[in-house]
Amino acid sequence: MAIILFGGIGKRLGSKIPKQFLKIRDRYLMEYTIEKFYSLRTVDKVLVVSNKNWMKKTREILKDKNIEIIEGGNSREESTYKALKYISNFAESDDIILIHDGVRPFVSERIINENISLARKFGAVITVVPSENTMVISRDGRKLDAVPKRDLLYIVQTPQSFKFGLIYNAFKKEEKNLSYYTDDASILKAQGMEIYFVEGSKLNIKITTKEDLIIAEQLCSMQF
Ligand SMILES: Nc1ccn([C@@H]2O[C@H](COP(=O)(O)OP(=O)(O)OP(=O)(O)O)[C@@H](O)[C@H]2O)c(=O)n1
Ligand SMILES: C[C@](O)(CO)[C@H](O)COP(=O)(O)O
Image (cartoon, rainbow, N blue to C red; front, side, top):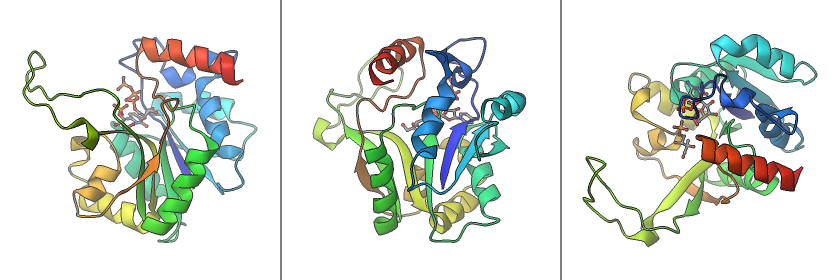
C-alpha cells in the first residue's frame, strides 16, 4: 500500500494555493505523483492524505480513480500517523507500506519496486542518494561549526517503506513527540531499529521552493 502525502500548504513556495494543486503542462502536480504508484501492478492500494481545506478539490481531481482519500494533520508526521491509524483497520502486520512525499512527482518505478522488495527483506528502508557536496553544521546559520566527513553523508528522499506493524507501533510509542521528526524512519531508528538503504535518484526532487518548480517544469517537458 502506498501512502501519498498531500496534507501540506506549501508555505516555502509562497503560492496562493498549495503546490500539489498547481498545474504543470495542464496536469495537477498531484496527478503526476499518484500516477507513478497507481499504474504499478506491484502496488495494491493507494491512500491519499490531503489537506483538510482541500478535500473537495482532491476528490474532484481523483474522481475517476479507485483511491481512498483522508484528511491530513498539522505536520507531515501527524499526516502519516493519521494514515497509519486509518489502515490499521485492515492492514496485516507484515504488509508493506510505502510513505511518499506527494511533492516528489519524479519518483521512478525502479525506486518504488526496490522499496517494496527491500522493505519485505529488511522491514524498514529509506530512499537515499550520497551527498556530492561537502555539508556543514551551523548552530546560528551564520558561521560554520563542524564539517562531517562527506563520505558518511546521504540525502534522504522518499518513499520510506516498512512492514506495517513496525512503523505503526513506532508511531504509537512516539505519538506525543511527532513534531520533533521530519521523516518517518527516524522515529523507528530512535527506537533502535536498523534502517536500510534504497538507491534514490537526483531526479527524485522534492518540490519545496520556486527553484524546484522551475526544475520540475523542465523535467516534465522532458519526461511527458
Ligand atoms: N501537515 C502536512 C505537511 C506536509 N505534508 C506533506 O509532506 C510532504 C513534504 O512536505 P513539504 O515539502 O514540507 O510540504 P509543505 O509542508 O506543503 O511545504 P511547507 O513546509 O513549505 O509548507 C508534502 O507532500 C506535503 O504535502 C502533509 O502531508 N501534511
Ligand atoms: C521526508 C523528507 O522528504 C526526507 O528528506 C523530508 O524530511 C520532508 O521534509 P518537509 O519539510 O516535510 O518537506
